[in-house]
Length: 242
Image (tube, rainbow, N blue to C red):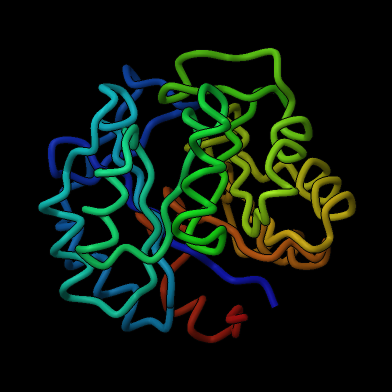
């Protein structure tokens, strides 16, 4: 069964959502991120995806106070991404209770360093974040599109024991226009032993059913949950747990 992973995007300690990864298209929500995480946990959700948008844009881990409070007040397995550039960042994040660290830009710009991190901490502690526009990788908070495809990026780390890949279709992220089923199905078929996490565009429970039918392992749900299009009770009444 597919696993639903709710998402919280943080900027200045607040919960926000971007449309298509554009910082100028920002929507701020009047909710407490810690309380929202607790609510989702009470609904039976077991994982949480946190994106530090300040960190992604500025190149240094930010919003750690909020992240620490979420880890302290929930038992969810939390993954964190955004602004991670040094080994000291990893040590700090693991020390406050982060279960998985999501790596994007560094994996593209410094693949040897990412490989070293997987060797040191274990590949099971990391998620490769592949943010794409038409299968090409985008980095630096989605502000820069590269000539590398998602498949080329994955191949770089397969031999290092890569376990999880989170693929975000930027063109759909925050738009509530449905998911890129064909892309995620293609990834799962090519890499059946990887945990494929779909991200971007979920607009209804039907999108999640579709991904499940394609044997995708997990799905990130952000805006649809925040705006009540998908309600926690809808998830609670259907077992998506793995």
